[in-house]
Length: 310
Image 1 (cartoon, rainbow, N blue to C red):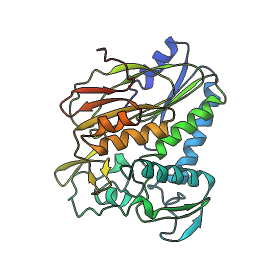
Image 2: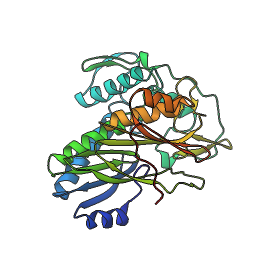
Image 3: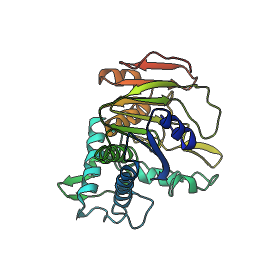
Image 4: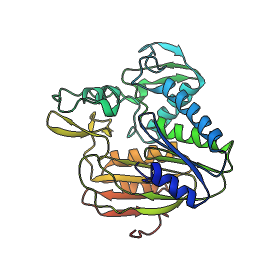
């Protein structure tokens, strides 16, 4: 997965060498990795429950999900979990000045991302792509929301889910790490060696990666993963809310460390969308980050450790 590349048997073997226990499976349309110091079965059950709850609340690919059943333009009472996810998404949009926006769902559907990623129909014609209505159209008052068209919480919900999963696993295990795709959250008083590197769905990647000792959370956003063919053109899922189109900036991957995965994911996504100013944007906000340019050049920001070739 992005951010942490060990998976399946390799991940289990690496964990076993450190006296840890691990499990890997799929949920929320991505790979899930759980590593704990003890009580693996109980921790996995807790994580699976969190993931099931988040999926039922916020998946735009399920007709029975709570977010899919929200009436457009009308006030409705929602569950505490969906209210939390929507509030974090709106706060992220406001904090980033709209670089991260929870209303890009209409644009994503126009680009062909109208079903789970693995089920996208490749090569279909590219039609007109509508711009998002904008995050200000999402109104929230406690547990009541007025939803606009195009809600999609992909830029924040997975990070929040990783945080909730780590907390749930940490409640039954001395220490835990949970990875959801490129989003990694931890619980407990220890650091975790994590391999951070660029990945791609279609082309070769010249990035051996770097192992960092992680405490807290890490998120990696990139334009080379989750790509698909739309009318002979490769498009990706990181959209510029100002246009509704895939970002065209100079960065292929940005990894950010933060206290929570929700914050790390918001920052990494916003930095990709920001384009050329990403390095300055991250530095001014005090983040530590690793940025991979389209030409493979690696830039680090803040306290990110010096690069070491594996």
